[in-house]
Image (tube, rainbow, N blue to C red):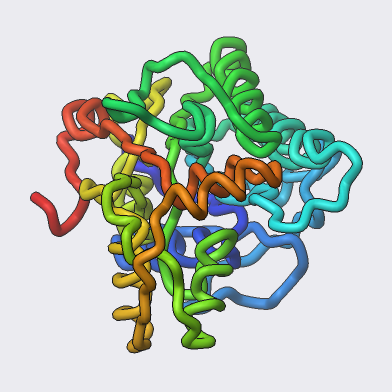
Length: 305
């Protein structure tokens, strides 16, 4: 049965904007959920304001006549966390609010919910082989823990209600005006400062563009084999830290000066300063095995065959 109307949450966010544009280009009928009323989204999409995300959020108006939900909204990585217990804040939005949405969606007769999770549910770093969709969860941060707990709760709701849940775990998402650590690197690039990553050529990190992730989302909205599945996604070509910086500079038309500093001289001080996660993200491997995604859905990252 074809999906008639899709609700996209977080529709004005970094990922949500791209998802809305992609689905509209595919002829989908959309409704956008946002925190505060903004009139119409670009291209005339109907908007419903739901307020801040919490366990108490009322999704009633947003879910009317909706067949599928694409849940992009959530609390993302915070570069300067000020909460005494960050996990409490992440759980409130990424876990409790997500499960409340799923319960209300099931009650409203929604058939399928696509949850944008995180590769962080698998872990922080790979060694020798990429993460797989059926690896035991090993969340490495409060953010990843909140996503893992949401996945577990969604599976239980699916079992109880028949709601078809599809989980997608992306790695770092790329695009214009990036967020998180990419935004920090982009800001440094904009200043034209030399960067000590000239020798950071051996690590392998999978990324996913907003366009590729949006394409996968479009596929799983009504693919008959997607229900109840967890899918990993990437652009299909791991890059080193140096290659990533070169790509970012080229995309913005900026010059790039890279100094040949040994990675060990940079990673060790970060680890000693309690910033091991940052060292891992800059110099470690994080590869993603997407063979299950490709085989199950007969899908490949657009542009790579």
